[in-house]
Length: 211
Image (cartoon, rainbow, N blue to C red; front, side):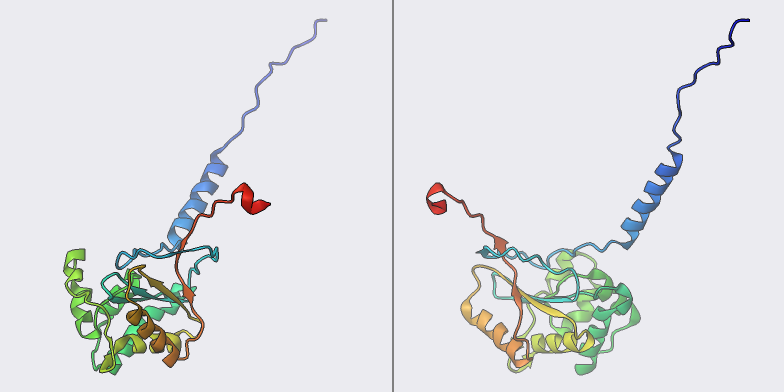
């Protein structure tokens, strides 16, 4: 009797479960990722050879722009549930007898961006809808002895989040007296350790240097 030949079929791989898993993971990462906020003001940082990476959380940053304006920023910590930013703003409001609404506190929390406004203008700054409207109030955080608001931002940031670390980002053309004033304020608040944000300088290694 002739042998019965069975029809040969090419193997088929069902990719549907893999696609579903990839979509699920992509959705999870998008929903849980935290994006780095946009810089409050352009800063041309000096160069250095340090390769220490920037921290992603538990950071407060003092920015010094080319016009010697002071900006400040602080994050919500490693978990947004902690809500460090609105707590710090609320403490500043108590100090100056300014009561911020829940909506204003949420705006301040969600923005995640640095700011260079006095606490007296903060309500109007938070109500501004466009970047141009916000720039009207960005005159820099006061650091004079009569009303040293930067010192209070640093104080309350450390009280609300004791694990917060300090970073300074200054423009290469900032005047030295302004930098010294900021350093003096940090020392007054017992902040003796901080990092400087710089651009990584390219080093060309020549044959003469390697000999």
